[in-house]
Image 1: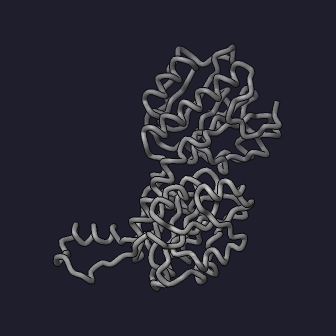
Image 2: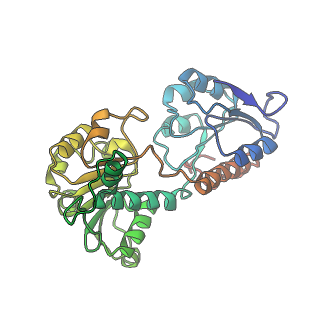
Image 3: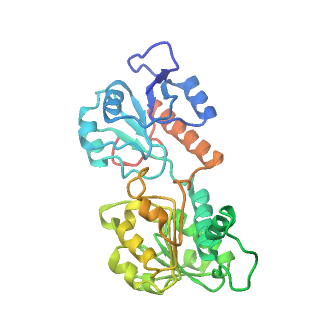
Length: 339
């Protein structure tokens, strides 16, 4: 992997921080970083090895990682004394050991909210694709197997009147609810905490405290919760067995939320109607059995893949770094108890 330094030389922090970026960002964002900081960019856009990450964390004042970088306690313990900020690209921070960062007094920031609409748009697209079997139709056409229109061929299901079960009603879950309401869907949700009545009324959403009941009654089940110990395999074999025949699953959150082997079995045995997935348990190594399962629509983690969203995330990172350099609390600080 080739790292390119956009400054004359590395130097001790003197008001211009030494910043290392682990993946390729949009050109405009990288150019702005080069103007403001002593920055090292990953021109090849290959994920950094553990050794590369360790070396970077010994050399920089600010590390800009992404979800593909696992910043665990061991790496944080080995970090140099100058590392004071981990400015994460993305809202999720499950790949960073926050407790270890707190112990070393390393500030962590993220970029919340910038991908909300993009991810909600993709979620609705997957709901439509899976429900209407559009992906299957495109494949039949592409492979030359289409025999012409028929009144009973490749029938999917309308969205109007269907019950959408949303698991996780944060920013993205609420944005999905807004969109689904426009399609005439009945919106039910499960969340750690019930939303205020005003928000429920805004999207005509009904709270369901019992996740099993939500799973059993939903026509389409969509996940928008973070990766955490209590959400690992949240949709497991037992809960999959509760789903209606023909019901569909959509996941644009984190792959670990679904037991993929149990999902493969449910799809193969046609106990559920289909699944739309943008995330996987072991990215980028996706189980071939999952990709070959009937009723699957799979995308390569495209939820945030818009120029607008990725550009906004880059600008948020720059703002967080600048606030930190100026001695102010960054707007997206994840560990607020740090000074």
